[in-house]
Length: 127
View 1 (tube, helix red, strand yellow):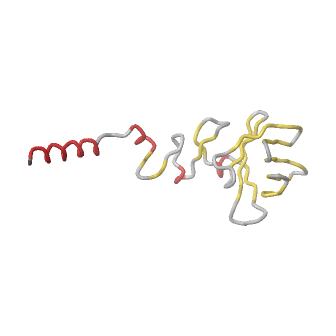
View 2 (view 1 turned 60 degrees about the vertical axis):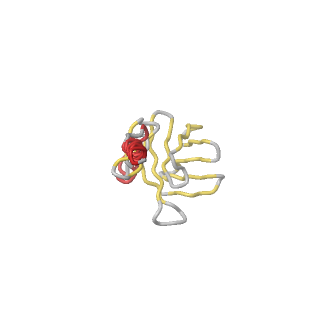
View 3 (view 1 turned 30 degrees about the horizontal axis):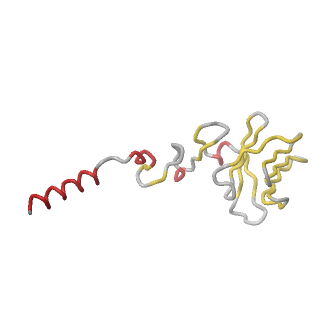
């Protein structure tokens, strides 16, 4: 009986210590998304195809409702990537006309040196 219990215990120990294929998605308890570590400010950029810190590489646009929030945008060719609390993960907007990018209900405009981010025609961010 002791041998059976010991054998079962060893099996559970080995299974518990085996590596998990998803363990590459964990680093010191912090979630890693697309090889980016959000706890250090990095997010995956679909346009750049690499981890970036939007607050370092993007253009900051302030929230109209809450002074602690901001959105960030980066450009590449005729595309714009929007990073905000409402668009997690980021979204890609396509250029519609000069200084206007759109995807679904989302719209970013750059008029009179002023960025405006709208969702369903409601201004969320502006500077």
